[in-house]
Image 1: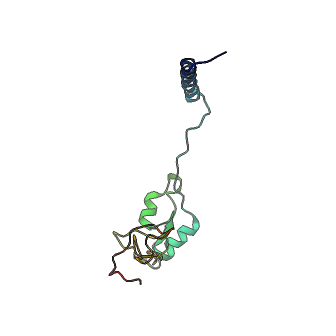
Image 2 (image 1 turned 135 degrees about the horizontal axis):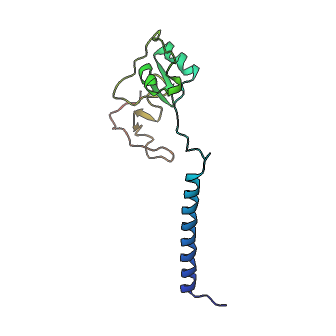
Image 3 (image 1 turned 180 degrees about the vertical axis):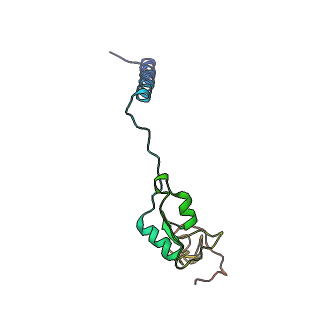
Length: 140
């Protein structure tokens, strides 16, 4: 039995049409089936450690970002609306307009010399990515 290119293409097209038909039947069947749960949406949950951090410092590391108590209250899910977050004992200033680091007081790590700028001496070497800082920027 010899197959030519036209026969193979016709069989491929028929199989693709059958697959699309079966996908449509599957989605229609699963949409009307009782007991099939909808995809779960992510819901913010405040841990006790994060709550204690908010009480102590006024900010908490949530998902790698420093959030204030007001921001956390706004993100709380419906089952956590009653969580009490008292006023902080001390406050940590979170500068506005700057990227917030997960670690208070750490803005960048060497070979960076400023947020988003790499030490010109090592910029361009393998494994070091990012724009070089101007040559008048001193390493701190």
